[in-house]
Length: 276
Image (cartoon, helix red, strand yellow):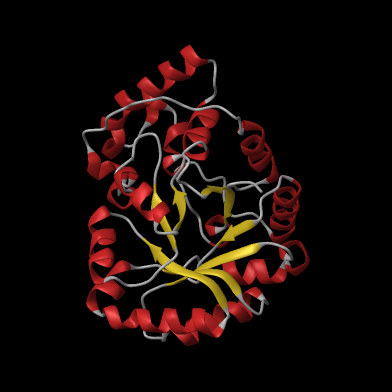
């Protein structure tokens, strides 16, 4: 079974610095069919991703056989109600995973987690967990001893802040999914036309280019296999706009370790929220 997880935010929103635009429903079906042929078994979505869930629900036949992970965003609707809405939009009876999308919901009211636990106990979701941005959020959850068995965090060549916690999470039986493998497309951005805010990243991107030249590996191969070869990572999210991109990603999978160290001093720029 492939470690690759197909992220579907592009199906419902314009996303990433190199996005070619949202694919039409026919293109989504093609992407899902290619994903299945390529051994991908898990889809990642959220009710916060525009109409991504609805699009997946309309593509019912191709999504059969996929494990689906969705997320609960902050809002006025309860966890249980939002979960049922997601099931209806996705046209499924249960989910593989359900994550709390926004940590502040938990921080402000840790008891809200009891609704996630109840969903798991009901058998309608196999695994529950959190989508996080910082180790401080993870430590807050661990200190509160809230039970969880699935987590999604950013992780890539430049951003390894969660690496010190992966072994512990793995030993706890937590399934670890990582996103931002290509830093939302920044790794492929023309180094000479970076937005003003991202110009400090140019020197690190050039280091990546130099490693690519010396190793004979493409940027995609380096970034993707860096995450895939980590023994503690169970799922590596990739997002695509079309079948050709997906085929390229599938072809980039190699059985080789990627030993690259690039230390980014401007840590705030590793979070795309700070790019605007």
